[in-house]
Image 1 (cartoon, rainbow, N blue to C red):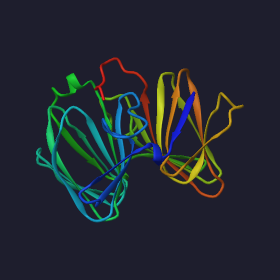
Image 2 (cartoon, rainbow, N blue to C red):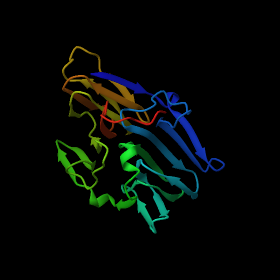
Image 3 (cartoon, rainbow, N blue to C red):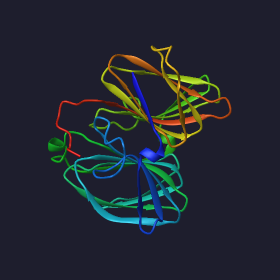
Length: 257
């Protein structure tokens, strides 16, 4: 398993307005400065923080599956499909933008959120009607074992299933504990550390030194053969990770960034 950790210095940065919303981007748009340009069909990932209430006005999208995950605060949504809604901490807005739609987002003061773009086969997805769905925190099932809490966001046992081959979990590991996640050949974990510090190792390479990670780091663990990643929280605080599993290669052409 190849494991790489990218600090905020290796991520793109952006903002809206006069800095009312600021962003770190583990995966940036074309011509932005992120070291990681994509992970398979995982096209874009931004961590946005609002310093005051601010609306990003109506703008168009097509083809991509765009997920907004609220870490804290509120995010309002309006679109040309007729939706006008708001989601709060732990909730998700998901647009499968299909043949095209416009939407606007309003972040409340001190809101933190992820916006993540998944890339299906664009020649096919752009022929589908656009859709919007919203989920509150309580809509997502959780598993708990040995104190580790796994909130299931995307996948067969979660309320969201995308066209793009993907799984997404929000994982909290108690201080001093570890959590193992299997990783099939030709898949990768893309992980943002939301809080805490810890390490990641390849269970099948026990002689390898654990790789340190901290808040805001972006971790990419890619497997050439079936593997198991071990995520370990430091002794002094819990470790919270948002983890997306994605294939490293797909059988359709990806947008040339």
